[in-house]
Amino acid sequence: MSYVVYILECADGSFYTSHTDDLETRLNEINEAVDTRCYTYKRLPVKLVFQDQFDTQEEAKRSERRIKAWDRNKKRALIEGEWDKITKLARPNSSMH
Image (cartoon, rainbow, N blue to C red; front, top):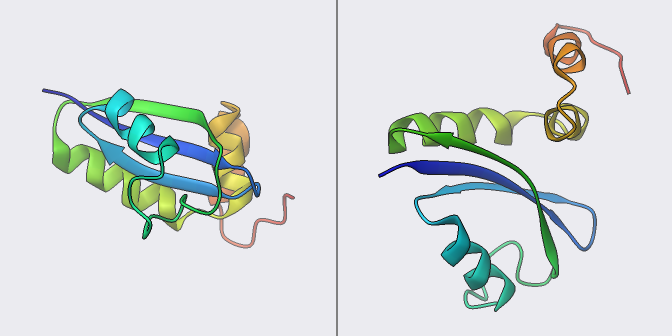
């Protein structure tokens, strides 16, 4: 079994990051608004903008926590595959916007 960390861009422009072992099912649940307590519930529709696969749930959880701690600019750089920008944004006192 593998696990996927994913980022969704919500209709209001915000990002939602999580992990799952079945991305297709999870996306269907989100888009069908199954869980009224979910962050995305009032922010539909959502668009999958990033995904990364991991061999273990622990690796996926660790990656999810790391990404959730990032600011919007760093998440956007990840989504766009701008690795140099991610490195610069990771430095203390970075002023890239």
